[in-house]
Length: 358
Ligand code: NAD
Ligand code: ZN
Image (cartoon, rainbow, N blue to C red):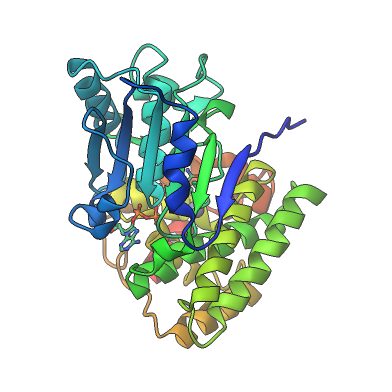
């Protein structure tokens, strides 16, 4: 049985980020330092002037062109060790899922020996990480609330996080002001991650009342936001931030279904980013999720968002084989959706047909 852990402290509301200084004040004394991981989008922004950054603090801007790789996490750790800054009082991550996951992974790696790839799996992290604060600037992945931090190890193609209670943020600052500048399409793709994993969970076999409750409420908020006239209005940015948080709590109590494994296949083989990959996959899922397929397309249409098509339409046979292998490897979600004999349904021929439809 799950012994679920949730975020202990969170502060929610417009302007919440202005409380970072007072939160840190309780943690640090003279001579202490903290390490910031900040989405590269904010590199020259006003946001930096409003952060309580001190001279001795370290700031890293996190690139988002590629999703986090294990090497990238190890490299950050190595820099901190070289600079003798590997024992900070806090790690503060400000950004989207990629940056939030980077903050979590480094926090664990600074207190545990070895490299990031040693901890890809379940409950492999032995020591609590550095105290960490997550501040999302785009809503939808639930990374702010979840107990994992997704990373790819390019050497073996494994895309898996450090699933651990130690991976959960100690403190969140949820400030809907921060998501104002997200480009519209990206806002939709990432927001849809919440909708998609919750509809997958609710259509699965391994369900329970807690996971369902988080999912139902997260989906209701997604509907409010994405079926409205302006998904990025002030109130809608608040709602989707809450939906993302609840969706992250839902993941801890449930499983995804068919869409995430196919999206993971796209990600490992074609480097497609997670959230857009889910949306592309959703459009090939009419036979599995007919009602949700219709609703998803209605939402995209309502917000004037175009979902790319044809990214896997004409590939070589060996690529379809790679896509197949990196999809069916996700046994738990696929058996959650299709039963234990899912491989009889998702044959190489069938998965190829689905990828061609995307
Ligand atoms: P992201 O971190 O990849 O960022 C997407 C884009 O939005 C980037 O270009 C970024 O610079 C930009 N951006 C972010 N905030 C902005 C702002 N306020 N204004 C303007 N631009 C902004 O986005 P994501 O979709 O949130 O995260 C995807 C990542 O999350 C993937 O690496 C995926 O594997 C991971 N993920 C993690 C979990 C988890 O539970 N840990 C769950 C799902 C996905
Ligand atoms: Zn997801």
